[in-house]
Amino acid sequence: MARTLTLPGMLDPHVHLRGLEWARKATFASETAAALAGGYWAVLDMPNTPPATIDAAALDTKLAALNAEAVCDWGVYFGASQDDNTAEYAALENGPVCGLKMYNNATTGTLLIADQAQRRRHYHAWPPAKPIAVHAEGQTVADILALVRETRRQTHFCHVSTAEEIALLHAAKADGLPVSVGVTPHHLFLPADDVRALGPLGLMKPELKTAADQAALWDGIADGTVDVVESDHAPHTLAEKQSEQPPFGVPGLETTLPLLLTAAHEGRLTLERVIELVALNPQRIFGLTPPPETDTVVDLDATYTITRATLFTLCGWSPFEGMQVRGRVRAVRIRGEAVFDGERVLVPPGNGINLWGPDVA
Ligand code: DOR
Ligand code: ZN
Image (cartoon, rainbow, N blue to C red; front, top):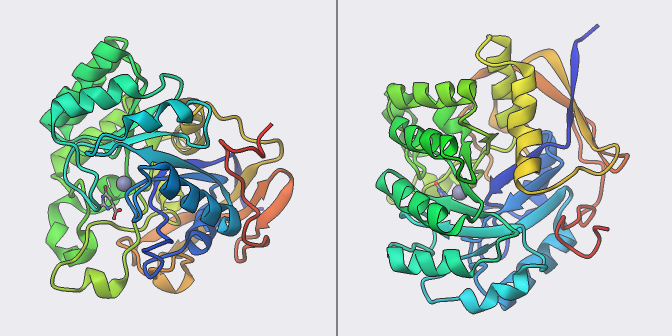
């Protein structure tokens, strides 16, 4: 008998699904299918894909496309903009978004806010009931923590990647600040001392760091500083990645869970901790309870090699290709409905719902 594990309502709070003006890279249909294949009940989509989700019109466009195409449940972030868009925020307190995303260091897209006074304006304007997710690296983590101390706004630090950042956030938690910490599978599992071997497929923001930084992320998982493993799924076409100016970002929705289960098999963390990192903690941070009969069954003993041939993501490649993993998604249910059977998506586009939308009681 194969050993199985059932996970309750896996939620990835950090994905870039594409679609719209970047449908050549991936679509809401393809990437939400990749989410189901990765075991996920729901994903939260970032605002940087053009047209950036920084005004009501762009938000409506994205909501309509996701409503039509998504096969898993979902939420979307509103984006903080350099051209002050804080006047939009009050309407979003009870509106259709999961939170605010603020980019404070350079990355894909045009949403960088480098000025601390501007950041402060966004922090004060955002309705306190919903989290602010931040891209902050190095000294910027301290700058954002100063705003959290001042405003007490609940803040999720995305893709934390260095020992220094982990130390700052560990101290902030000890001080009782309302912060949570996400780390990505690429920062945990790609060989930190061999970045160049991956070439452009190893390029993302934040970039891969040193083996010592990677060890600090694992320590953060062990001591509770890290709350979430989030994929930062960011598909770009292989041709774009192999071009003269490769864009930053890697896909990850289909590989996060098997990589974590493999680490659990190797004794690097417990299965209970895996469930916290990919389901219970993201649910808590975003105030979600999964619907009844919403879960993922994995075969803990199935081993396989990650290959591009079996991926659902439209970009069709993975920085983890060639890695041998243990643990395979066999079934995903949402609201009692079988949505993925280990090989096929079983529901039509549009089956997923906005978890901050009118369909939720
Ligand atoms: O590498 C990255 N790619 N980091 C980000 O923050 C954005 C993402 C993208 O959208 O491609
Ligand atoms: Zn991201």
